[in-house]
Image (cartoon, rainbow, N blue to C red; front, top):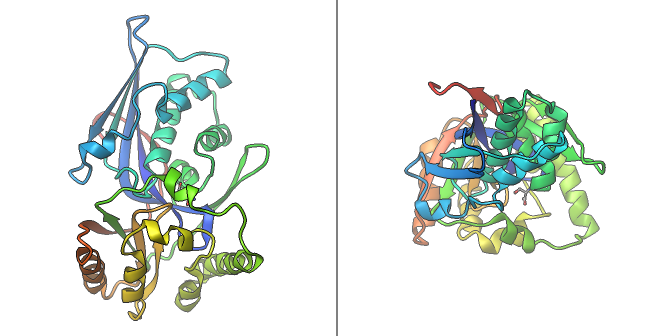
Length: 315
Ligand code: HSE
């Protein structure tokens, strides 16, 4: 038997929602798991680049042995029902840029779990899948939208369960994903964060996250402009993302721009704006990075409302 799962990319944090806000985007990885017939063949993992935006060097960061997140995800699921995985061929067709803050690792964890679950006759429900996936990833902000789609606010509870609620993203707000040609590993981007933050910074983010929820619920552009700020992670990561400070500065005078934030742990940047001025916005991002010898891939997308989906080979 063979199962393929298409999983969306995700962007996390989105300004004030460090480790709790995330959104699915229409860029996909497809994870296929096939039971092989020969006993003792073990688990084989192959990674194939589907997009020209992905270079082979990036793909080398995806381990293909038992250190692979895919392998660990499958193992955790099998173990949860008292079994051990064996004789599996796993193919990852990758279109999500790696180490760019677009949820590439969450997508392979989720894809492997959903595919293995289907192979096993669906022993795990959504609650169990969310919990296993977050055990591997450590935080729910990319995992939850990769599984359920849309814009999602989620929390990882002390018992390992995930509580989430979907929010409606106003369709008139455009999301421009700006992917630079340099990588940033989440491990490095998390290592620069402090263990504790000043109370005033925690209060700042609590205020902005409240504003964010109200702004999307009421499509309040001016409130969203106030909401899309952060003091918990972005200031510490600024030095790792060349050009971010300049891009924010160069876009702040354009009225249609609601905000410019780091996507997840970086290195990609999101520009949230109204429909007008998209070309101008893209030119500013491109030229600001070009001044620093950085090439980029820019795409304006809408929210992907579907999460991980089992597909037939023809899809
Ligand atoms: N919330 C996470 C972070 C997302 O900012 O580190 C990246 O995995």
